Length: 463
Image 1: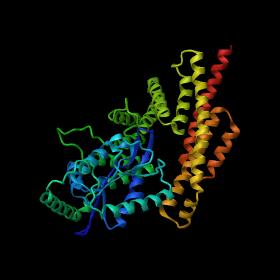
Image 2 (image 1 turned 60 degrees about the vertical axis):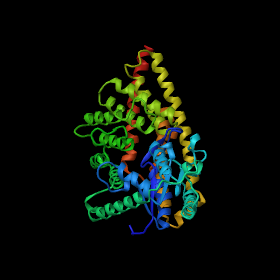
Image 3 (image 1 turned 135 degrees about the vertical axis):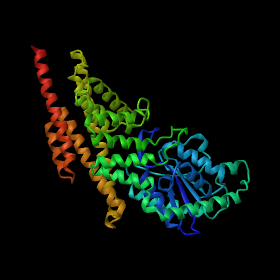
Image 4 (image 1 turned 90 degrees about the vertical axis):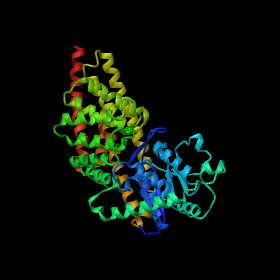
């Protein structure tokens, strides 16, 4: 960092966060890397988020220092993240100006924020449209120019109470000097230390490559950063990191599959699985319970798995929760949990209705993705070989593959073999890793066995 280079501290969550008001999950890393950081750096400012800071011990110390001395703070309060809202309040109390508030446009703003200017952007959940990236970058650049060149307060504390900022010149200069010394010291041994951002990025890459053992180790390391000291409040656990660690633990199957499943489930219990409305957490719990049931650990895991998938289905009406819930209902229809024919029939009928819903959801999602895929903005970006456009194009193709896989499984469960075969054929034409098609084959084999068992039971009941 240059000696006189201005600094921008970005207040926001990181990783994938659930917006509990809408049930949607948002990839906030994309917001940061696509919408915020490039714009800030284009203005000659150093841009840093909390997970990018080098520090030892409690992360609160450097975070509060940034809120005090940063020339500009950009606060993204998407998903009504309580940490971001609290840090925004601290900044507004400390500094009368140079604070910019942004959020994704589906967030319902709390009443007390109605008087604060909030610049919004459109987030698609796991993606941001190329055209929106271009639009918002321009808006944010203009906003930065404005706040860096006007003396008017943007903090409601100083606006409404007509206060003058406390005389902090001496303290700020001292804090700034200490911060510079710390940064210079860290620059000398940067090879031996990693930021939370680097570790989690490496962990996500390991997950994407199915290197679950490495991902598990890295997420464990990430959780050690900023870990509360003895006697401190331990409620501020990072649920995103716990969730990803649980996924890596479950997939790593160490020291054996059953132990790994139980360890992963306990991690989710520790982040209040019994009461959470985080659809990512309950979906992972459903997958773990399903595996425990399939590994002969008892029908209580079948019941729990159904409850988790139902919760996810009702909270966030999407393909993933629906197709898995239908599958689990077929399991229950054959289990001892169904004590009579009526209960069994009810589960089978409910599963069919949900599969019809899956097909409707597939149609909706396909329409949205193809519209983005074929938009003029996307075509222009691909023509320019824009990095984000290429990345989003590939992500869209992968989502199209999974839509076809969900459609195939739903049609198979409904007995529509022509539609099943067409969906499989269309999916095979999209580039994919072999394991992705294997996952469908595994599900179909299980459905075939369930169908054979159902036929036997039906014949016995007719005798």
